[in-house]
Length: 295
Image (cartoon, rainbow, N blue to C red; front, side):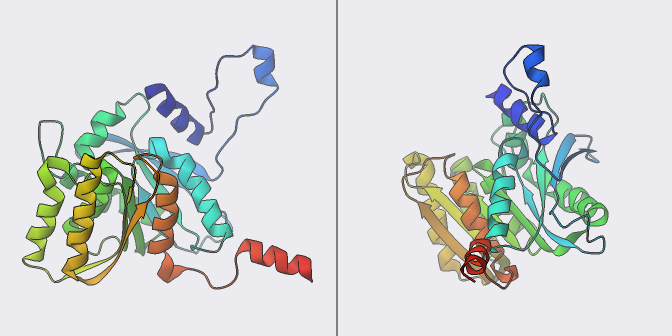
């Protein structure tokens, strides 16, 4: 698993690692590069080292005065290629506005499973978990201001997305920083973490709040392990019955898919949902092409 993750991150950097081949053969080929991407090293005020995988819209350079909504997504070392492709498909179909993507990552060589467990979990079950509040503070107080000042991110168009423990974090952010993100995408969130800490967070919040301002997408795979899947189903129902003011909730079940195979469909539908208020007018790319062909 570790070698595959390094390959993914290297690809985002513009360096594609492939199985060893003779030097002459290597010289015949160019690396496959994800365009408009860059890695921004960043050390938090607390001294932890991160990397931001920034993916800019195609129109970015030609529009120096334009601001763009921003998708902040977790597990960038795994999901950047998927999201770059998903972005292109949504833009072609005219289902989303142009937006910046900022992936939260760690330097190459990091044990991603260990670090993400620290940063994404909302309660501590041991010394290496329960640091979500600090990580959320890092995003809201350090990452977002940098993106908005340096890359022209739109403060009113922030979205947070993640899967599994990342999905847990994406939902919790709505309670812990209400209104900071306009949209939350949680794909197969780890709702069973620490004996239902997420449901308890919602219960505590509901005692003193009647509103939860966000567009939220929560999904899971029908073939996921039952012990992981059922807490998601229970939380979806719990949240749906709250009737929070300002919450636009879409719960979704992906039939025939398991824990990681849900990501493709989940991000397509999640992004389609959270960007719905900003969806551009006009036909899709295929409709335009077919219409022109018919003329």
